[in-house]
Length: 279
Image (cartoon, rainbow, N blue to C red; front, top):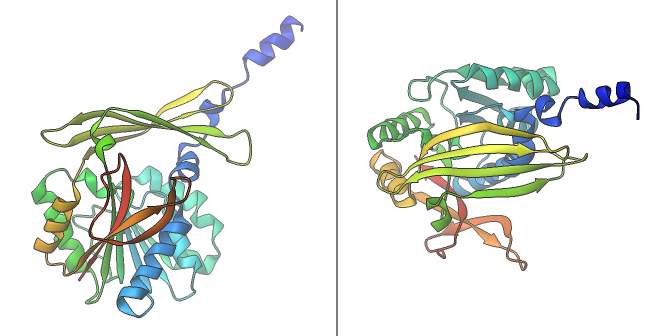
């Protein structure tokens, strides 16, 4: 190989330097189709009707809002987030893939979920543990009360949570992601946990086949809220029935993606669940 060819090879940019962190997130973390499957089926089961208006708090790139409007020409979605960068990315990369009529049925708001005013939705969703950004009881109660007031009279609030004894430890977990190309590695790091306050610091990193890494693609400063805390606070803020939906396991011991109502569960190392709070 000539020196000139060697110089060209060295100057080639790394995959990490050109990768899109939001695209990587959607490929490795978020499955809008499965999320909306659960939300729409559960709402119909609870209310014996179909929901029309869906609001996603902490909506990020609004991929879930997009999935909602794609499933019916009478459906409308409202996305609320404070971060202008992720909202703009969502407009450019997710909304732009929709038809003009579908885009017209989505409203994205750069506002605080503690203060936003919208039309009354059938459903409000706060997924991906996003409400854990609210780290004290008074603030989380304020948010839950705002959600309760914002929903229609028979509206339903959807949340998720995770836990298990691994959630209290400082760990690094890796998962290989097949993106149809060379693939990449998703790295979840629980970097710090305070058992007294349940203050939790987490990071998402990505690693690529060329050896490059995108470190701190996403950083999270959360409180690890427990299910009893969340359930009790939802009830105190006016919600009626609060239900936990627990994920089952397949014959290989892997999560099966099927969430069913539960009042008891095993003390697993790690678990994820959904919750509904009915107005």
